[in-house]
Length: 62
Image 1 (cartoon, rainbow, N blue to C red):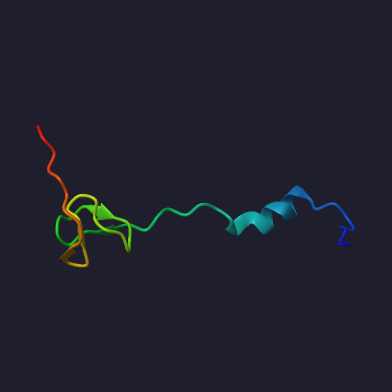
Image 2: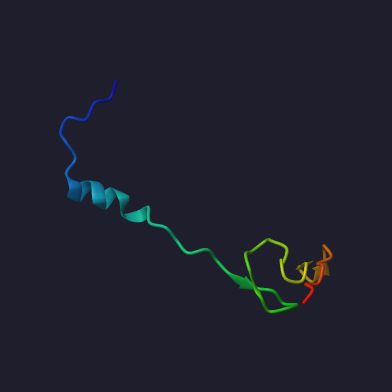
């Protein structure tokens, strides 16, 4: 069974975790309606994916 020989200091622990930070999500823009969309997802605003209408979006009533 692996047991650490000495306690890991806060500094060394922080250095090990330096690459575990949260990254911002990548954002692309829909070529049809110019709204921000996550990559490889259908646009929630217009329903297009890669230039093809995949799903019909109901228009909002005012």
